[in-house]
Image (cartoon, rainbow, N blue to C red; front, side, top):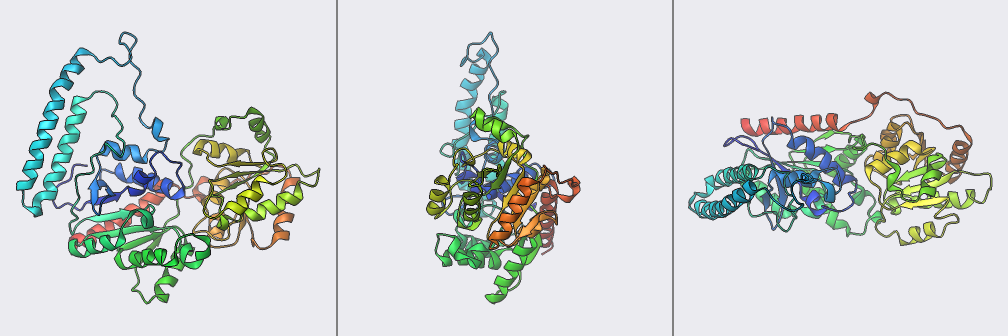
Length: 468
């Protein structure tokens, strides 16, 4: 984070990770964390982690930023070392007590002096002074503590250091921008500062299918208009999403924006682990591998109704031995679907629903399943399809949106309205021996290649900004 004056800076927005701290992460949250981890660790980039808070972008301390994007539960992000046997738990060595007694008052004094110092600095230079002081404070904390860094909660993290964008800065957004960013204010900030903005776009489902979402149509419409009008570059997660964006631009008479397709990494950041499934009988049953796996939030768009209809019929046949396992949290307006799911014959034994599952647990389910099913009505990509294929599992998936792209030519693609076709395909899969999809790892996108493309795009924008 040591940045030279006037050097192009990458303002890495982590607002989504902050908003979802301690919660079970949905796909976009995981994506922000995967990308941010690799950007933050790149010494060739001058990265400043920021969050949008109280109508301003505010700098985060590096250790807190890393805790936000850690790909493990918040409660276990940075374990403290166990005390040695000769020291009582909670006790501190004498030299550490003395150091803390000296350094803590000194740190408070320096903070007070810094606040007064900043007031006397001209506004145009104030930002660089703030950053220098932030780095100095971080160094002081590291010097005064030889143990693992202490995690800050959002309540104790200092969000008082406002980032005043410069014309050479690039703001990178890859989270839930419609929820955590005030785009009207950001648009004004861009015009007054010359800030360049790069964003990741996941889909245009709110525009194409507003009936799938609970928010008013103009809420998302304005978000997409702001993306087009304010971004220097937009990364789209599939060719279908890129085509949908260009169609939206044309339909609304907007000027074209530079776009590039990136495929999100399919490598789950955890080794398979079944222990999250506490019920041993359930775990043993799943270990037999006689189940179909469906991964995705339980909501209208994911089309779990099709699977419920199929298993309602198929379980009536005593010879049908393929269970159904659904992994996904409850989504918007899914009460009817959930009621049907929980009322299904065999629910809790032949039909299982895991509302939350870690990457390790999900990876184990992928490995054990007989087949993976993805009947969604539309997707910006369909990452569960790629993840299942990467685990060597056969997939039956929908032909809507970008899902065929995610199938990589390896999945069985069916129209989700073809109920008879899905029924026949599931029965055929249940009767067939267990199959393995053997594909080389080079066929699958990974986070390293994804972020490498993003870095090239960022540098291109920075170069244009510098030359200008």
